[in-house]
Amino acid sequence: MTHTDKHQQLKDLPGVDHLLERIKNDDRFFEIPRKVILESIRFILESIRQDILRGDKTDIIDKDIIEKTIEAAREKIKNRLVPVINATGVVLHTNLGRALLCEDAIKNIQTISQSYSNLELNLVTGKRGIRYTAVEELICELTGAQSAIAVNNNAGAVLLTLNTLAKDTQVVVSRGELVEIGGSFRIPDIMSKSGCHLKEVGTTNRTHLRDYEQAVTDQTGLFLKVHTSNYKIEGFTASVGLGELSELGRKKNIPVMEDLGSGTLIDFSAYGLPAEPLVSDSISSGADVVTFSGDKLLGGPQSGIIIGKKETIDQIKANPLTRALRIDKLTLGALEATLKLYRDEKRAVREIPTLRMLTMSHDQTCKKAAALQIQIKKRIDTQARVLLADLESRPGGGSFPELRLPTQCVTISPENMSVAKLERGLRLSSPAIIGRIEGDRYIIDPRTIQTGQEEIISKTLEKILLKK
Image 1 (tube, helix red, strand yellow):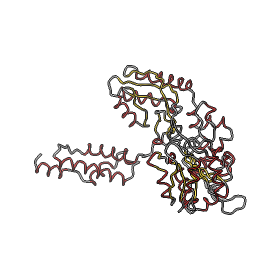
Image 2 (spheres, rainbow, N blue to C red):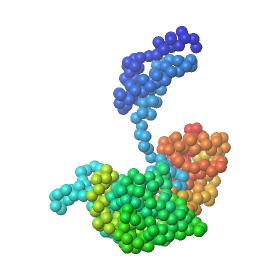
Image 3 (tube, rainbow, N blue to C red):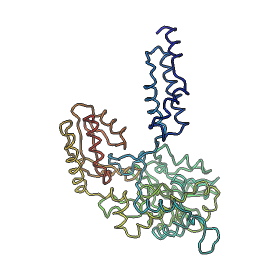
Image 4 (cartoon, rainbow, N blue to C red):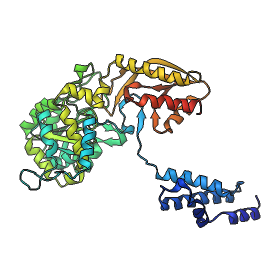
C-alpha cells in the first residue's frame, strides 16, 4: 500500500459522532452505558488506524465497524469474576476459589446483605458491640478454646498473632516446618513482616525438644509449630509434639503458637481418609494460640481463625492491626452459618460441599460418572470416544499432601479435533468448564461437578465438537 493509499484510507475513517448517530437506534446498544460505547468506538477506530499504518488491506465499512464495536462493548461490560464448572477433581482448587459455600451460608449472606444488621451493636445493652461475637462462642464451643477471633485469611491470622506476641523478639521454629504455600507465601517472610526474628532449630528431617530448649535466650518471645499440610517428610525423621513443646513453654514462660494451615473440626479417619490434626487436639495439647483457615477443610468463606487462651486472644484483639485485617459482615454471616452445621457432624458432612466431596465414596463417583457418560454419548458419540476410567481426585488447597481419592472419571478423545483445542473451547465457553488433560484424553472428574452441571457439560461438548 502506497503512502497516498494509506493517507486516503485514514481520511475515509468515519468520525466518532457519525458512528454514534448510526447506532443510536440500534437495540443492541440500549443497555450499554454511553461511556462504554464511546470507548469501544475509539478502540475499534484506533485498531483500524494501526492496521492501515502497517500497510494491511482494510475495508472501511460502517456496518463492519459497528459490528466490531458491539462486540468490544459487550466484552467491556461483562463481569470478570464469573462462575466456572470445576471438572478437575481438585476439591479445594485455589485458582477456582477453594471451598464452595453451603446453602445455609448462602442464605445467610443474602439475608444479611439485604438489611442493616447488628454487626457492632449489642442489642441487649443498646451499646456498641464487637463484631466477632457473631462467631466467637460457636468457635469456642466446637474447639474447646477459651476465646477466638476471625480475620481475613490465615496469612493475616499468622501475621497478626506473631506481631502481637513476638514483635522485636526471637521466634523459635523447626527447620523442617519453614513451609512455603501457594503464591510464594513463606513462613520466614511473614515472620519478618510481623517484626519478629526467626530462630531456626534442628534440621530439615529431625528436630528434638532439646533443640528448642537450647535455643532459649532472654530474646526468645515465642515457640512456633507449623503443620506441614502441603508436604510430608518420611524416613529418618523426628519432630516435637505440640504437647511436649507446650510443657516446655510453660516451664520457660514462653507462649506456644501452632499454625495448622488447613485445620479441621472433624476426624476424617472416620470416613476412610488419613487423619488430619484436629483443631480441638491442638487446644487440649496446651497451645496458647492456634491459627487455621476458614476456606479449606472447614468448608467456609475465606477467613483466618485465631483461637486460644483468653489472655492471649485479648492481646490480639487489642492490636491495631486487627482492624486492618478484620472480616466484613458477609464473611461473618457465612462463617457463622457454616460453623453451626458442625454441631451435628453427619449434617455437616452432608451439607458442606467440601466435606461432601472429600468423603464421596468410589461407588458414588462411579454412579455419577456412568450417568454423565450416557448424557455425553447421546450428544457426541460419533465425534469422540467417551469412556470411563478409574483415576484419582485430589483434595487440593494444601491439604492432605499425599492423599489420592479413587474416582471414576469420564474420558473424551475427540476424533476430529486435538485435545488441546477441546480444552480451550471448554475453558472459553460460558460458563467455563475446567477439566484436565492426560495424554490424548480430556478428563472430566465427577467428584467436583455439582448437581445440574452435567447437562451444561454435555451440551457444551456438543456445541464444540459438532460446531452447533
